Length: 473
Image 1: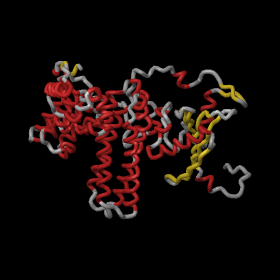
Image 2 (image 1 turned 180 degrees about the horizontal axis):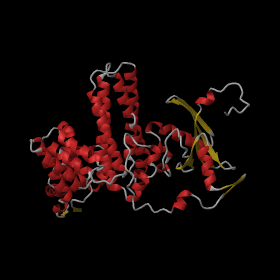
Image 3 (image 1 turned 135 degrees about the vertical axis):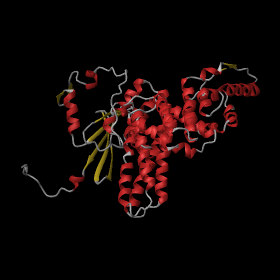
Image 4 (image 1 turned 60 degrees about the vertical axis):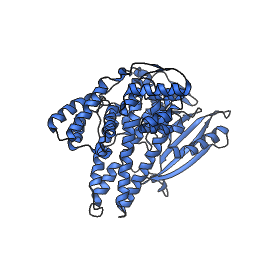
């Protein structure tokens, strides 16, 4: 085997499984390889060069140690490439940023250091910030101190973001927007941490919790925009694991709000919520975002970007100037304005069909016989958010993990011809919602898919008597 800084960790372990335990003995940070999720995701894309940088190791020594262990266990002689290839502009930038932060903490002139750091961060990639922090921790700086750093460091980040500069990414890029939202979330969490007397500051606490609940839009865009394009690349781990964590956070925000409303708020509940949100930010920016940026193409990011406005944003109004060079699909095809449709009882143009479906007082989604989302009606007041990222996605992956079993059961029963419909009703945000699923079949009974129809029936449930006259004024 040819071993070099660009060798993927996953490829190495696939050929030499015993190296997992050996890597852990070299550096405790490799303990992450014991986690199946991290091994399948990060390990699939991380190179030995990047792993060495993140863990503050000399890449040449790492390659030598690995070659020695392979020789010892298998007798195989490994060809080594020059480890100097890993030393690049990014590596130099990381070391310089690390030096600046250490000097800030040592009390060096803040203004000059702030200016240097501000210039560096404009060209830094997100994972370079993570690598810088990891090295500082490895050198003895407490992790709690790294997370907060110092006022000057925090101010540098804030000033950069105010100018719409997220490390290494253009304004309007999906990850740029998600990271801006994370910075906004961190600001709200600091406000929450400052509350000491829940009784006296009840109004402020409830207002903060309501603002934090907007994180739902942040998570919805991940679930409906980012996860589908990752799944198309065979990366399913983040969507399965993170979606469950999203639901935990959503549920806990509701629980904390109820506690605060009922004057039963405890400090520990707020501390737990703050930790859950901070932990998710950490997972996004140290695992999900770097992996996605390294994996997805411009065309993939175009798909992830398309339809973000339909879901909405949390706390911010992002710049929309980013446009991928992959956006070259003829607009006539996107608009679906070619030809007309001969239906059983009439003839309609695609425009007319689209107008009809989007003017119905119900939400419609159609899943084809392969369990793929083929259509949803983009009405202006949709009950449950949808975006173009779900088109072509397996419907099982469009629901949180806890609902997947029920979704699969409905589809199986429809496909087998045992059931034709399934009805549910829930109360949400003061509305009474009716959700119905219908099996769609051809005349001979052949299964062609599933139709989901959702409707706000709050007003309908209140109807009594008759209304025969028009009461317009």
